[in-house]
Length: 512
Image (cartoon, rainbow, N blue to C red; front, top):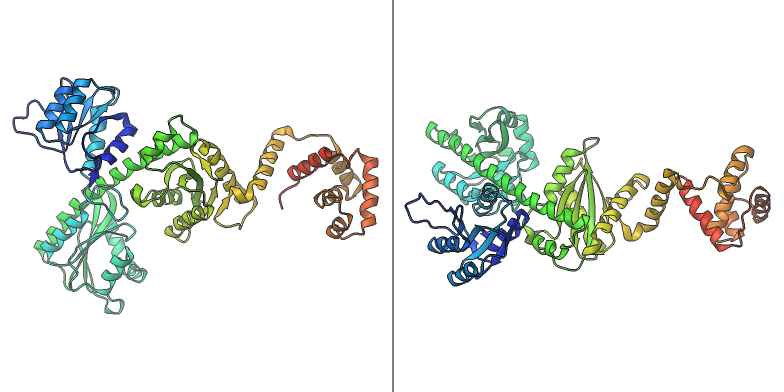
């Protein structure tokens, strides 16, 4: 059931502003009514769309007569004081629809939200599928399960009497067990569902804990959305088969509404998250509309692919990241280019890694997930956090096998070197100087001056450690250093020169 608070938050992304709210924002909204001057009967509804009302005051009066909890009126906030006073007196919340926003767009959003009914397994979308499953079970006299294309449970009837082992495991695990899926695959059940709209009887398999089933595909046009399964020992008679066939169309409409609502919510959330990641002066307001608490955050950049195919796995990852309403999800996400970005509250990098692990665990086994986690950031620092997360993802290319998630806290030094390498690749590295001179000498004469200088610098001038690293005598290090001075000007006694040479060596040498 949608609340006024959720309606306000979602419509805020469409240019609608709350002008006054004399009722609780937790009030439930169950139905929508549109103002129609030609309608003779008395209108009743929780949400009143004052289309064509002469004024905001008139809209409030019409909404009060309809016993509405909230009215949407045309006009920029703030509205005239008389209309606000009337709304306060009538106990009607007022939402102002900006003149640039069409009533058609707003009506579509409002109907999608308010008529959504109870939540699905994913926590999104308009559906009373459980009630529909109960009604169908009553009509057919048997248990019913409604599943999506991947055999995941969307709804099931409350009737459990006589349920077999496969049904019980399906409901507990929220999807059909693999052994049963394999059996259905071998028997051609899924092939039938892909091609036919006719119900199919599936014979019992006692060795698998399966009694008989009638199953029918659920479609929208030619697109397959899922299936309905009815537990039965024998094929249904013609009358009940017709009921099942007709119910598949009803379920299809529910699933389409569910998809539309989910897409709407994801679009609103994505737009708001992108604003945070790109930087916005009203960040505090955006946080509130997303339902995120003030404080510090981690930005997570996540990429997913199956072999060379990147789009399908990425969409699956985004779906998992945005599964559930705000109260059931710690972060908020967006899909931009080839990356899912998530703003996760809190400073704990372990919690961010667990979040990445949970997403990976929810995806098919063949999906490869890589992620980058920014340093903890205040809301104004989220654009910098996005860059840090992107750079952590890029580290996977030069540090394979480092696990699914790389955190900026632990890898800032490698990221600095990557930035310097990018600058060098753009032609900003010095073409002349000690490092370049020694590199040319080594190439021309087969000497090992550059590795020797690197070892000496990295061991902070400790001849014994440098010699051990190179497998030579300390006197060899001394001799090479003297010879280097004949090739170029090192000035190893100057700290700034040593630092510059260490940086150039890190940038110019390929990563290990």
